[in-house]
Image (tube, rainbow, N blue to C red; front, side, top):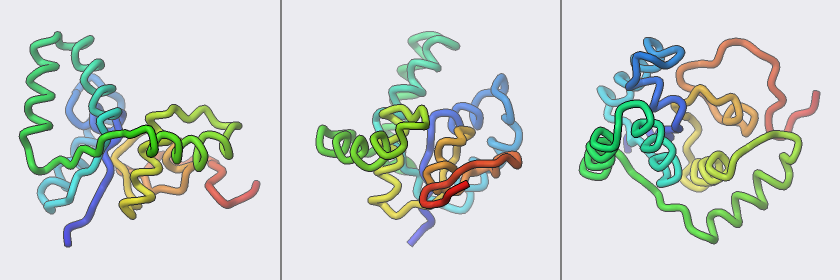
Length: 151
């Protein structure tokens, strides 16, 4: 079975856009995942975030090309958010972590990663590290309180 990695908006965007911070190292990590045949998992919420950022930057036509490419390519597994998944994400991630500014999209991503047993994520968002996941590319050194730990 191939390695599964979650794609978050910030990492995916940084991998494909030269204008983004940490583009070179994120693009290298993304290319490595593709070359190694990783199963790339994301949610429709992440796809929606990536789409609107693409539309704002490059226009609606490019946004449609992006969507067509994602949904036509078997490389990507897009898991649809449901009411049940959002409720579970709220109970497991938003309520207990009320001292962090997790978005619903983040919480749903964390819950999908938990359910799919995915430990790594292509992201620049330190919230995934707070939730206990390994960031690709590795985050710059910083003090982060992880799930289940105390300062």
